[in-house]
Length: 149
View 1 (cartoon, rainbow, N blue to C red):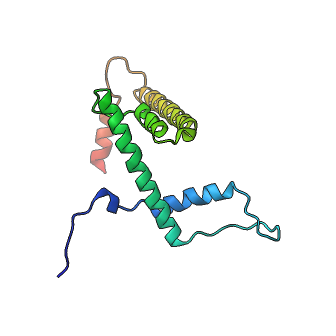
View 2: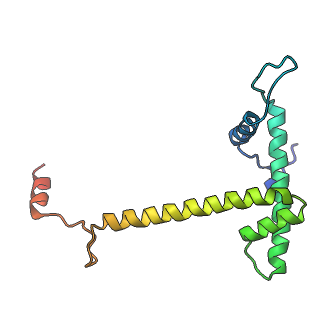
View 3: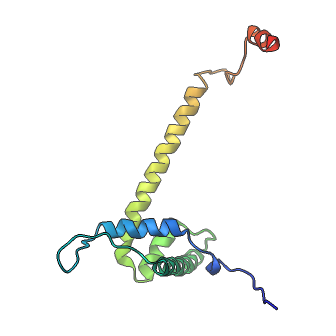
Protein backbone atom coordinates (compact mmCIF):
# COMPACT_ATOMS: atom_id res chain seq x y z
CA UNK A 1 0.00 0.00 0.00
CA UNK A 2 1.04 3.53 -0.76
CA UNK A 3 1.11 6.03 2.01
CA UNK A 4 -0.31 9.37 1.01
CA UNK A 5 0.77 12.48 2.76
CA UNK A 6 -0.63 15.91 2.39
CA UNK A 7 1.27 18.27 0.15
CA UNK A 8 3.02 21.16 1.79
CA UNK A 9 4.16 24.43 0.20
CA UNK A 10 7.68 23.03 0.15
CA UNK A 11 6.42 20.25 -2.15
CA UNK A 12 5.33 22.76 -4.75
CA UNK A 13 7.63 23.34 -7.71
CA UNK A 14 8.48 26.80 -8.93
CA UNK A 15 7.97 27.18 -12.68
CA UNK A 16 11.02 25.58 -14.29
CA UNK A 17 10.82 27.84 -17.36
CA UNK A 18 10.92 30.93 -15.17
CA UNK A 19 13.91 29.61 -13.19
CA UNK A 20 15.71 28.74 -16.42
CA UNK A 21 15.03 32.23 -17.82
CA UNK A 22 16.42 33.85 -14.66
CA UNK A 23 19.54 31.66 -14.66
CA UNK A 24 20.21 32.15 -18.38
CA UNK A 25 19.70 35.90 -18.03
CA UNK A 26 22.29 36.03 -15.25
CA UNK A 27 24.70 33.76 -17.14
CA UNK A 28 24.47 36.04 -20.16
CA UNK A 29 25.88 38.91 -18.07
CA UNK A 30 28.93 36.89 -17.04
CA UNK A 31 32.12 36.23 -18.98
CA UNK A 32 31.72 32.71 -20.34
CA UNK A 33 35.10 31.95 -21.83
CA UNK A 34 36.72 28.52 -21.96
CA UNK A 35 40.40 27.76 -21.36
CA UNK A 36 41.21 28.57 -25.00
CA UNK A 37 39.59 32.00 -24.73
CA UNK A 38 36.56 31.03 -26.79
CA UNK A 39 33.21 32.46 -25.72
CA UNK A 40 30.46 29.91 -25.16
CA UNK A 41 26.87 29.77 -23.95
CA UNK A 42 26.68 27.58 -20.86
CA UNK A 43 23.96 24.96 -20.62
CA UNK A 44 22.12 24.05 -17.44
CA UNK A 45 21.34 20.51 -16.31
CA UNK A 46 17.80 19.68 -15.18
CA UNK A 47 19.16 18.74 -11.75
CA UNK A 48 20.75 22.18 -11.49
CA UNK A 49 17.42 23.86 -12.33
CA UNK A 50 15.77 21.76 -9.63
CA UNK A 51 18.49 22.82 -7.17
CA UNK A 52 17.95 26.49 -8.07
CA UNK A 53 14.23 26.04 -7.47
CA UNK A 54 14.80 24.44 -4.08
CA UNK A 55 17.20 27.22 -3.09
CA UNK A 56 14.68 29.86 -4.13
CA UNK A 57 11.89 28.18 -2.12
CA UNK A 58 14.09 27.94 0.98
CA UNK A 59 15.13 31.58 0.60
CA UNK A 60 11.49 32.68 0.22
CA UNK A 61 10.42 30.70 3.29
CA UNK A 62 13.34 32.00 5.36
CA UNK A 63 12.74 35.64 4.44
CA UNK A 64 8.97 35.23 4.90
CA UNK A 65 9.32 33.79 8.40
CA UNK A 66 11.66 36.62 9.37
CA UNK A 67 9.43 39.30 7.80
CA UNK A 68 6.46 37.80 9.65
CA UNK A 69 8.31 38.10 12.97
CA UNK A 70 9.17 41.71 12.17
CA UNK A 71 5.55 42.59 11.36
CA UNK A 72 4.34 40.87 14.57
CA UNK A 73 6.96 42.75 16.59
CA UNK A 74 5.39 45.94 15.22
CA UNK A 75 1.90 44.66 16.17
CA UNK A 76 0.80 44.29 12.55
CA UNK A 77 -0.76 41.27 10.89
CA UNK A 78 0.20 42.24 7.34
CA UNK A 79 3.74 41.87 6.02
CA UNK A 80 4.84 45.02 4.21
CA UNK A 81 7.59 45.54 1.67
CA UNK A 82 9.56 47.32 4.40
CA UNK A 83 9.26 44.18 6.56
CA UNK A 84 10.72 42.12 3.71
CA UNK A 85 13.59 44.59 3.29
CA UNK A 86 14.25 44.50 7.04
CA UNK A 87 14.19 40.68 6.90
CA UNK A 88 16.76 40.69 4.10
CA UNK A 89 18.99 42.83 6.30
CA UNK A 90 18.38 40.70 9.40
CA UNK A 91 19.17 37.48 7.51
CA UNK A 92 22.58 38.86 6.51
CA UNK A 93 21.63 39.54 2.91
CA UNK A 94 22.03 43.29 3.36
CA UNK A 95 24.03 43.57 0.16
CA UNK A 96 20.83 42.68 -1.74
CA UNK A 97 18.73 45.31 0.01
CA UNK A 98 19.55 48.23 -2.32
CA UNK A 99 18.88 46.18 -5.45
CA UNK A 100 15.58 44.88 -4.03
CA UNK A 101 14.57 48.39 -2.95
CA UNK A 102 15.34 49.76 -6.44
CA UNK A 103 13.31 46.97 -8.05
CA UNK A 104 10.47 47.63 -5.60
CA UNK A 105 10.47 51.35 -6.42
CA UNK A 106 10.40 50.52 -10.15
CA UNK A 107 7.46 48.13 -9.58
CA UNK A 108 5.56 50.77 -7.60
CA UNK A 109 6.28 53.42 -10.23
CA UNK A 110 5.06 51.13 -13.02
CA UNK A 111 1.94 50.33 -10.99
CA UNK A 112 1.18 54.04 -10.48
CA UNK A 113 1.74 54.75 -14.18
CA UNK A 114 -0.58 51.90 -15.19
CA UNK A 115 -3.27 53.08 -12.75
CA UNK A 116 -2.97 56.60 -14.09
CA UNK A 117 -3.21 55.30 -17.65
CA UNK A 118 -6.23 53.11 -16.78
CA UNK A 119 -7.93 56.07 -15.07
CA UNK A 120 -7.30 58.23 -18.15
CA UNK A 121 -8.70 55.52 -20.45
CA UNK A 122 -11.82 55.23 -18.28
CA UNK A 123 -12.28 59.00 -18.42
CA UNK A 124 -11.82 58.94 -22.21
CA UNK A 125 -14.27 56.03 -22.56
CA UNK A 126 -16.88 58.00 -20.65
CA UNK A 127 -16.66 60.52 -23.47
CA UNK A 128 -16.56 63.38 -21.06
CA UNK A 129 -20.21 62.85 -20.05
CA UNK A 130 -20.63 64.91 -16.92
CA UNK A 131 -24.24 63.87 -16.31
CA UNK A 132 -23.33 60.30 -15.32
CA UNK A 133 -24.55 58.63 -18.50
CA UNK A 134 -22.36 55.82 -19.70
CA UNK A 135 -22.60 56.64 -23.40
CA UNK A 136 -24.26 53.30 -24.27
CA UNK A 137 -27.44 54.97 -25.57
CA UNK A 138 -28.47 53.72 -28.99
CA UNK A 139 -30.56 55.56 -31.51
CA UNK A 140 -33.97 54.14 -32.29
CA UNK A 141 -32.75 53.72 -35.86
CA UNK A 142 -30.05 51.36 -34.58
CA UNK A 143 -32.75 49.25 -32.93
CA UNK A 144 -34.79 49.11 -36.16
CA UNK A 145 -31.73 48.02 -38.15
CA UNK A 146 -31.02 45.27 -35.63
CA UNK A 147 -34.64 44.05 -35.90
CA UNK A 148 -34.46 43.91 -39.71
CA UNK A 149 -31.39 41.62 -39.65
